[in-house]
Image 1 (cartoon, protein in one colour):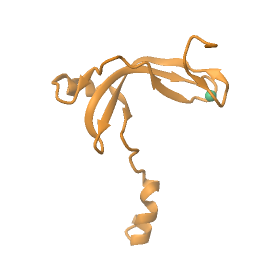
Image 2 (image 1 turned 90 degrees about the vertical axis):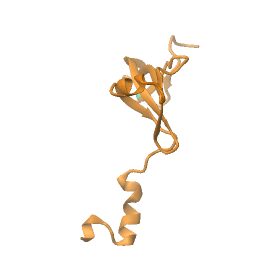
Image 3 (image 1 turned 30 degrees about the horizontal axis):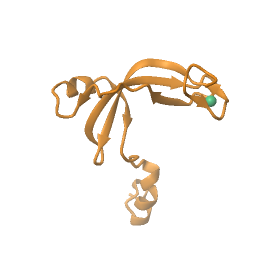
Length: 105
Ligand SMILES: [Zn+2]
């Protein structure tokens, strides 16, 4: 291992650096239902700004059935979704084909 860390930016050929230690991330399931909240670290490439979340604890900080879930959810800054949520650009063609586009009204 050439570095102390585990993450290298392939594009910039440089080690990612800690951007913020101790961030909360919510993991969702079944089309975005709350599931688990994790504590981890945010790393960033100092050259291009590419970011990843890594350094997760062994266990989640909270699971959806625990009382502390809603308390920690207020501190969530990042998400890990089972599926990528559609953006407006994803559905733009569907809206335009159906004549429901806001630009046609
Ligand atoms: Zn980079």
